[in-house]
Amino acid sequence: MSVPLLQVDSLEVTYAGRRRSAAHRALDGVSIELHRGETLGIVGESGSGKSTLGNSVLGLTPILGGRITFDGQDITRSRGRARRVLSRRMQAIFQDPYSSLNPHRTVGQSITETLEGTGVADRDERRRRAMTMLANVGLDESSYDRFPGQFSGGQRQRISIARAMLPEPELVICDEVVSALDLSVQAQVMNLLADLQRERSLSYLFITHDLSVVKHLCQRVIVLRGGRIVEQGTTMQVLEDPQTAYTKRLVLAAPVLDPKRQRERRIERIGAVTTNFPTQRGA
Ligand SMILES: Nc1ncnc2c1ncn2[C@@H]1O[C@H](COP(=O)(O)OP(=O)(O)OP(=O)(O)O)[C@@H](O)[C@H]1O
Ligand SMILES: [Mg+2]
Image 1: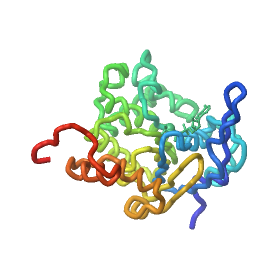
Image 2: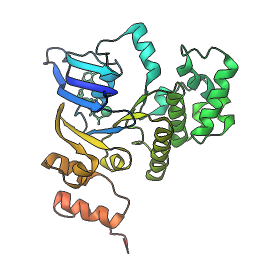
Image 3: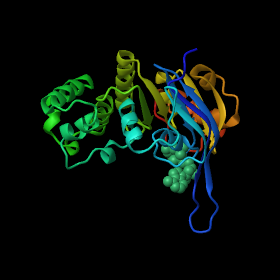
Image 4: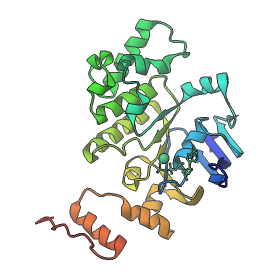
């Protein structure tokens, strides 16, 4: 097989403890491989180390041990200029587009930022590319001169996607990108990500606590618990035949669109119906 686009070997990340409390090991010997054009899901309960893994790849977290390789190049401790060069090839989209988009800057100003240093010096050319990209993510060209506050959550996430895609990255780290959206908007954003991936042969590291979204996008899934990999396999294997009680719980906790099936799964998960809510007639 070809060299993986991203390879993480035995990654160790420790956060310093507050005051005199012990340091906290957020990742402990995590190894992953991501190939070109592939989507790898990273799932696990809150605090299991998912975001720490993405942030390590992005150079946002100090690394204690192990190695991260991007397209064959060691980037474990890459900083400064080397990191800036890398940032054109590697972009990120986060859960809350409002915090990553400056509310005082127009959408155009925010999204063309990622083109800085890419050699597209001409302002008109940047504008033209940004306009095309806005259209690609399903937004009106007039969005360019508007402010993030004038958009819905789903539209703001489309703006973040346009911003990330503009420098034509090879890898996009998606950290809980649909978690704050309604189910119907989630589906639209996931379809958009899938379309962009097909057009550009992109790779996604797709971080989510919600296993129902993994099914639509990921070929393989890694399950994290307490900073360690407890299970991994194809999406089908992990979702249909989870091997650990922990993964089984995660699978059962994932929302399903059918309320009847949702209720059955709640019973499977907790053994009995404990809510006092009236059941919907015909549900
Ligand atoms: N900057 C930090 N300083 C100290 N501890 C941190 C820091 N960031 C994360 N942690 C701790 O590291 C562990 C892993 O956190 P991380 O954010 O990677 O989890 P996560 O799987 O992304 O969780 P969630 O689903 O809630 O986003 C947690 O125990 C968290 O409290
Ligand atoms: Mg997280």
